[in-house]
Image (cartoon, rainbow, N blue to C red):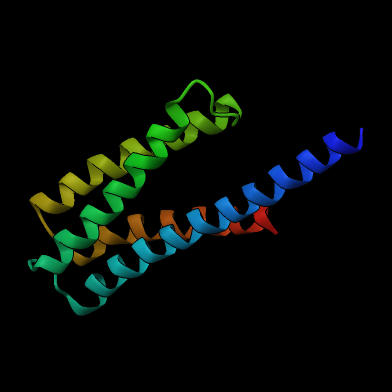
Length: 122
């Protein structure tokens, strides 16, 4: 019984660290996008660098929840997958027609998901 409790405690700590790491990555992506929005660098390499980083990050998240061994509830997996699809499509739209206001939704999604992950980790 004690071994099971220790294993659960270890898994919980690792999960908390993982959530903190994911939250930090999302905040990093949000800050990059916010910088582009604030400086108006919409036609620069900074825009494409920020969008590329964000898209890669979300590709990892979507790929992770698509795995059969992912323990998240089905509703959460579907929600992350749907957010990922929105992010991928919106990224293409921003690249086709850059505008500072188009970055707001990507920034807000990253910040909100990061806040939720940090709350769960605490």
